[in-house]
Amino acid sequence: MYIEFRNVNKSFGTYKASDNVNFSLSKGSLSALLGPSGSGKTTILRILAGLETPDSGDIFIDGQRVNDIIPAKRGIGFVFQNYALFRYMTVFDNIAFGMQVKKFPPEQIKQRVNELLKLIGLDGLSGRYPAQLSGGQKQRIAFARAIAPEPKVLLLDEPFAAIDAKVRHELRQWLKNTIKELNITSIFVTHDQEEANEAADEILIVNNGKIEQSGSPISIYKKPVTPFVAQFIGENSLINDYGNFKGFQFNKNFPAAIIRPEFISLFKLQEQIQNTYSAESGIIKTITFRGSYLEIIVTLNNIDLKTIWPNDRELLQPKEKVIVLIRKMYLINTDSVREVENTAITTDNSVII
Image (cartoon, rainbow, N blue to C red; front, side, top):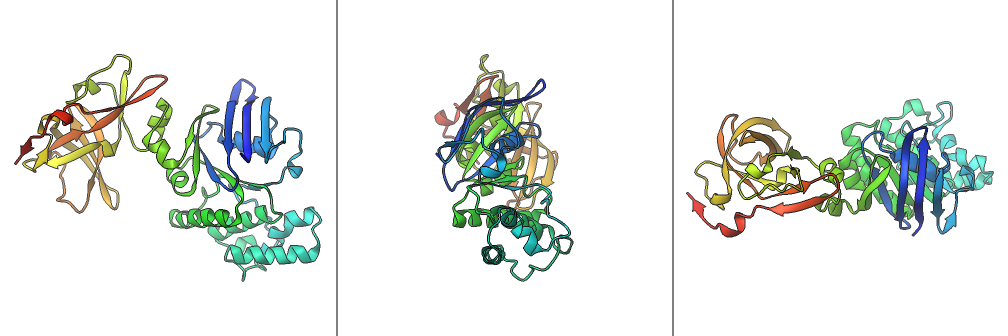
């Protein structure tokens, strides 16, 4: 593995920012540290960069222990959330800055900067200043400056936070493609699940200084292994009285359940459906337009559940009675997650007309 954290701990007073952190990342991968604010994501990034010193544990880059190596010698490129461009320097000089500090020959600097300007699609803007650039352009310049000295590892701290939604989506795709082309091992910090899912090869879920789970975006979404991950990833309804739903029995070892919108199917009254025994009647409480679909809050047994309804189907109305089928849910306790399916579905093949 190219990057490794082994039993890394870091505290700030009584606050434990990194709690026995262990993970490894392969060369050329783009990984996301995903978690809520204050979870310890940026601390992990800063420890890897050498900007924070761990209280214990070891950090390896390309097989070399780097704990005692100063930041400038670790081969790290860093892209900050606020870009940190030098406003009195041109685009060319901003990109060249790291190479100039490391005493690269002037001709090599010129060649490298011009190559990077073409790579980021801004080769006609070398003489401009940061104030003359858009947010997306500034982010590309910050990226080019970070990789100009050809670092071993690229770190990005909330790289898209200050950019509007459309440009953010375009930059995520651009960043992913560019990193693959350069084959540079990269880690970015984010609290945005969509951002992590779209850009990252691997996601590390961080909570209270711990790595709760790591894996591909789809594996984490489909198979959460801790209660925090099950609640944090995706949209969820947290339910205590899940034993009141047809096809589910309350388990005293799991006092709560999580139901995702896609676990629920809605049908209009008199619509032909299977599994009528496992379905029950609900009432539409609220409808929110979300573009390609409608977000629905449906009340079932005095419990509100969130689900979705395609907007190309016949529209639902508030207070409308509907048929609700819960196909599965995650049961959770303080330590574990169990996926359970509606037991009535497997024994019921009836059809209503």
